[in-house]
Length: 218
Image 1 (cartoon, rainbow, N blue to C red):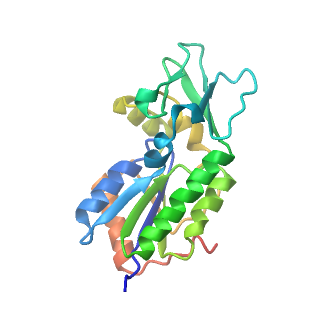
Image 2: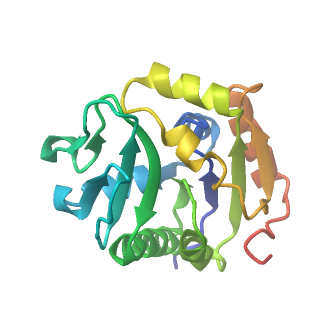
């Protein structure tokens, strides 16, 4: 019979440190942890699921609307980037997820739940910025989820965003005031003063020490 695994759910704005902490946690845990998340699922949609707007008029989409502003070179969506917007000189200011995108997120979390039931430990990271996103993640409430909030000063997140160079500007600021609006976590981490390995060690201790996992119940 297959046993149940652990689930670590990381939530934070873009460039808060989610991927680095997930990789560090994979390195220090005795059991193998599968790392997945929204950056692994959304880019697998076809490019036509992503609409780009300058915010000047209504744009209808059932999946993902990306709003860029700043008066620079207009962004485009390129098949070669797996559906990711290439933003030119403009900054991302808003992301709106339609019903098709919400169905994808619901499917992602149900896939995580099925993986957990099969006995596989999972790290899932997301940028949960609206109530429907929280409704999708709470589908994991029957799993032993350690819900971890990653906080970082906006200036630090924006600096990391520039240094990464693998995406356009604006994501850190666009989500910054939205991702922690619910205010409930099992564990909160400040990622400016601690390295990814130090943050991962705190998560590991919480998993091993029986840290309460009540955020989803709340």
